[in-house]
Image 1: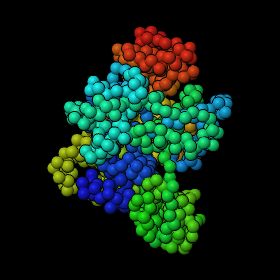
Image 2: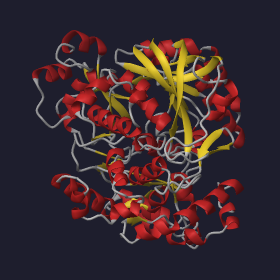
Image 3: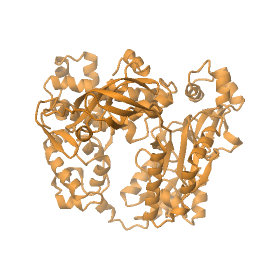
Image 4: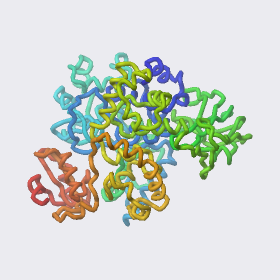
Amino acid sequence: MLSQGINDKIALQEILVDELTDQQLADFCDMLNTAYRAGNPIVSDQDYDFIYLPALRERIPKHSLLQAVEPEGVAFSTDKVLLPEVMLSTDKAYSQKEVSKWLERIKKSAIEIDFDTHAIQIKATPKLDGFAGYDDGICLYTRGDGKKGSNISRVFDRGLKVYNSAKRGQGAGEIVVKKSYFEKYLSTDFEYPRNFQASLIKEKSLDEKAQQAIKNKAALFVPFNQLPYWLGSIDELIYQFDIVVFDALSGVDFDVDGVVFEVTNDNLKTYMGANRKFHRWQIAFKENKDKAQVKVLSVTPQVGRTGKITPVAELEPTFLSGATINRVTGHHYGLVREQGLGAGSIIELTRSGLVIPKINKILKPSEINIPIMCPSCDEILQWESDFLICVNHKECPAQVIGRMEYFFKILSNSNGFGIATIKNFYNEGIRKTSEIYALTYNDLTKMGFGDKTSKNLIAERSKSTTEQIEDWRFLAAFGIARLGMGNCEKLLRSCLLSDVFILNLKTIENIEGFAELTAQAVVKGLKNIKNEFDLLIKYDFNFEITPLQKEITKYTHALVGKKVVFTGKMNSSRDEMKKNAKSIGIQVINSVSAKTNYLVVGENAGQNKIKDAEKFNIEILSEKSYLLKI
């Protein structure tokens, strides 16, 4: 973990993002997220969105903050409840060009389902910078991890009103404070509106300023469906883009940090779907503008977990978008070779809207210096397309350390096994994750870890095996090329985790989403991890088993293959009902569309879902009727 002094220097940009190790960056982003969710932001939202998060996305693209909705932290009740609907994050675009690419993906999806591209409707709304929640009319929940949140209905009991005098039960929205009110009455007591918004939510009694803001209807819950919006076709959005953005940014008296664009056509939204982090039919736009011409002083190679060598350009100090930039990461050594990135090069550097610095293009090439030997292990490097690779995968220190750290990062259910700890293990002769699991308390103390640290590491390691994780996540933690979390889940729908090692090339190729090259990489990767897998599996990890597709097809009940939406409070746990439904061949979806087959309703069911079901003539089942059908 980073010390408070280092954290302060990073936040003040006395230590730049490019000067942090990957683990330091990850730890700092985790800390920023925890503080933000607790209502005590350490940096501005703009710095988080445009400096630290983009840096994390570039350097650690599989970090948990980027793969799923950011964890809520411990500021609120640990007694989490299932949200009425999944609340995902929103993907980001930092230029009109990126928005245009998103629009092209929408058109492509429409064509794939024979939907008239001219009939596509895009909605634009202000992106509120508030505290996200979901109001089902009975309870108000924090967003939590996107699936489970904390019940904070107390804010309505304290008198909080809904924006536009709307009724309760409007679904997703945000708790916000009017910008004009905050600046006039609260800015001297609260550094950010976020600090004040969090004070409304926490269990402690409200102070006088918070009570007054609620009484004056300056603090409100704003459902997204109550926001002013623009609606038009793709062509109209492209033509009126600047006007649409300006109107959205200036259309409400709340802090706004962007514009949300989304598709409104239900069939198209259903087809495009979502990943674990965000809906593909929605994107948030934040503009980028700043550029500078910068001289490169030197280019240094860095070794990644997979053996890829990344060029890092040391720059003449350049002030850009409010910070002094000294270094920037290049894309790959193909860029160095083909465009002449070296000492003396002049590059166009982009840090648009405070985004992490990027090399936009090389304006003046210079003599290059491409490494022959790996900077970590001194082995001869090899070219693979545009990438320079260290193929000494088994013994290269940087790769060995990276793989061990990656395992714990992907499991995401224990703390303490960051890069500093892993480096200490490596220095003591540890080369494999299985060796970490074999360490005793005495082993750790002999390595120089203190009594408390050693006990904590043992406890956290135990937690990693006892806390339930998905079987596909465990497989993904081995870091096999082309076998990320999504592909691991697809693979385990076809076979048990214990049987993946007997799969042949043809079998894997026949799985949807696995082309020949991917299948080849998977077969090779599985062979390489087999021994390590066998050693780790002995520690009895608590797996949530992925249901097999072939077992699902054996079911003959009326709902096999049907698309079903669950809403409202059930007698059984709704989360367990969904898991059971998936295991017996039902396609569980979260929103009602024309393609939905059944809506299963419990107490206090979402009225919008019921209205949509009636609109599309979808059969509505009670919990009892549903159970009789299966």
